[in-house]
Every structure is written in C-alpha cells, then in structure tokens.
Image: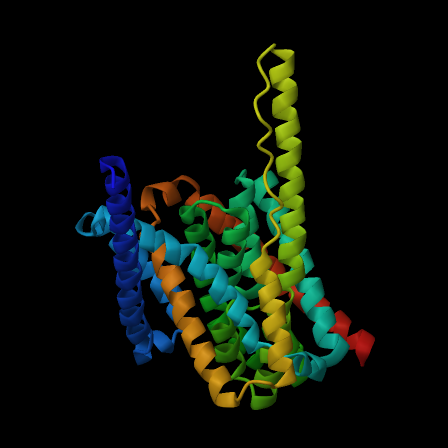
Length: 368
C-alpha cells in the first residue's frame, strides 16, 4: 500500500471514529435532556424534550464548545441533518387517517385555513415588514403554522438553512406556545372566547404551536376538548407533507431564477460562463416517508407495543437533532435578527388568536 493510500485510509478511519464519537456524545446529551424534561417543574410548563434540547445544546455550544474535540463536529452535524430527516419521517406513526376522519370536515377545514393563512402572513410579514431573510421568515411561520419545533426542523432540512435561523424560530415557538398553554384556558373559562367545548377543541388544536402545549391547554377544559384538539393538531402535522413539497418546488424555482440572473449578469459583463450549478430539486423525500408511516399507522399492521416503542425512539431521535442544532447555534448570530424574528412571531400570535377565532366561528357555522 502506498504512503498516499495509507494516509487516505487512516484519515477516513479517523473521520469515521470522530463522527461516531460525536453521535454518541449527542445521544448521551439527549438522554440527559430527556431526564431534565421529565422533571415536574419542566414538564408542567409543557416544554417537550425537543425544546429543552435546543436550549441546553445552545448553552453548551456557546459556553463550553471548546471542550468538545473538533473531530466530533461531523457527528453533531449528522445528528442535526441526516438523523433529523429519519426522525421526521417516523413522526408519521403518530397520525392516522381514522383519527383525522373523527373530526371530519370541520377539523380539516380548520387546519388547512390556519396553516395556509399563517404561512402566507408569516412569510410576508417577516420579509416585507420585519426585513428578515426568506429562510428565517419561513421557519418562523412554519413553527407557528404547523407543529412547532418539529416543523422548524423539517423546514430547516428542506431549506438547508443555517442553525441559528432555526434557533430563532424555535424561540418564537417556545415563547408564544407556552403563553398560549396558560392563556387559552383562562380566556375560555372567563367566557371571552365565546366557544363551546367542540369549538374550544378546534381552536386550541388549530392555533397552539406544540402538540404537548395543545394537550396541556385543552386538558384544562375537558377530556372531549382534549380529544378534539389533539386530533386537529395532528391533522395540522399531516399537512406538513404537502406544504414541504410545495416549498421544495418553490425553493427550486427560486434557485433556478437566481441562477439565470447570475448567468445573465456574467454574460453582460463579458465574463466566462462557468458550469451551471442550479440547485437540485428541493423536494424533501423524508416527507414522503412521513406519509408512508401515516398509512402504515392507519392500517394497524404494527402491534401497539411496537408503535409505542418506535414513537419513544423517534422522540429521542428528534431530541438528539434539536440538541445538535443547539450545539451548532451561535448566540451572536441570533442577536442580529432576534428582535425582528420575535416580532414576526408576535404578529403571527396575534393572527392565531384573532384570525383563529374568526376561522373557528366560521367553520362551526358552516358545518353545524
């Protein structure tokens, strides 16, 4: 074996070892995060392990990052990217077509109207009013519109955006989702929402960010409201697939247009035209995996114990991805757009309350 070949093999082995060590480190970190999230004071706030993971990861990444060997970075990146795609696909085992059918057209209409309107308003307000870049605006809108941190992760993977942009979007989810969990039951019991139990389920499930926050809020109303709210929320999760596919096509068109503009500019300046590096079609194939697992769950081909175990493992994998994302996040980058991203989240929060109530009243009136 030549010296060059031996060096290449040694280098590859060193990279693989470093990557495995990085994945193991993130896994142990996520295990600790999971235990922390089970502390009653933390669980009582409706903070899922995903949220605790990105916060703990960001603290480590900014305060103690120098203590981690540089070779482990590949494992952290693997957890934040490839493991993330796998985990989002398996998230489909939490949804079934039968559950969606239980709430019928009212639940579906509520979910579609909330998701589409929130995405459009959030993207427009973020870019046009708050002057955010496209990715940050979309991530913030997705977290509010669909399923909180899980949606941010899915969009981050599709857009291939920087970790700090996802961290800003998750910050919005944490702040306003937690506020909803405490505020909504108070407003309902005070009679200010003018909703019956079914309406409360539609409104809570249609407008609160995280699944855990939906359950936490609706459980303060009634078991029936909790059941309806959870199904409506999971219907919003189901909409992640078509939305991601649509965003993937849109991003691809934007990349092609940008590439054409760049080539035109080069031609006008007499510069040589290099090989065309148009972006690949940004369709998130893991979204199709998500849909496949929804179908599998709906057919009940897996034993209940197996589904429960897979969901537990999936939550842990998502926690690993969030923790890795936090480790890669830099507070200095967040400061640059933090207030603007949070203001975008506030605009969306006002819309979710006011617009969400309007949509809920309209849906109930149409399907009553």
